[in-house]
Image 1 (tube, rainbow, N blue to C red):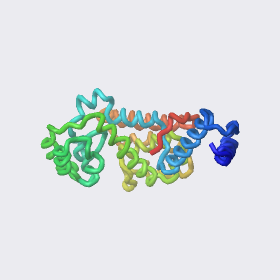
Image 2 (image 1 turned 90 degrees about the vertical axis):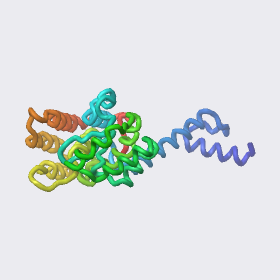
Image 3 (image 1 turned 30 degrees about the vertical axis):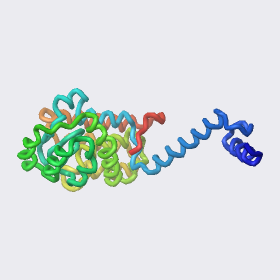
Length: 260
């Protein structure tokens, strides 16, 4: 090593807080790696729409599919959930609200091309049209690994952007609160108009004020919309989201956070 390069390395070591011995040893390499990792993590944080808790994401998945075993048994084939839903595959991936181009982008290479082309025909079909069409796809299967891949790399980032647009300032809330509101938008969409959307709209003002208690109160108020005996799952989901927000002001370790 030339004297000039050795001197430059010593200057770098001093900047990193390593012993300036002019040798590219384990301590210097470790400090360089830490600096690179911190820089990469900062870029991810800046680009992300939301910073949510891993526990919140796990809860969202549990609401949507219950478990991998349940998914394999009941959801690996296209289903029609009812109402104004479209044909749904994977972890809550509603083809009725997607274009054929988006479906191709998200699923290409994860399921056979022939099956994918058949799914294109369900794009934008909702309600009765989706119910009438879903039986034509009864032999199509979506492996759990493929469903998880699309959920984490395509669906969640998309819904994180929707959540941030629906609730400006949500990214300033604690990670559990961000996850709970992501779950809400994932479940109900982002529309704010109409009497059935009263609480959805009110939450917008509470988010702007950073009022966690007000947000959780609106989530609990929302249960007025569904009969507890017919739809107990929605009551439990809103209560769980509200509970998560009420306890959101806590310390989060780095490995608890997910950037979307």
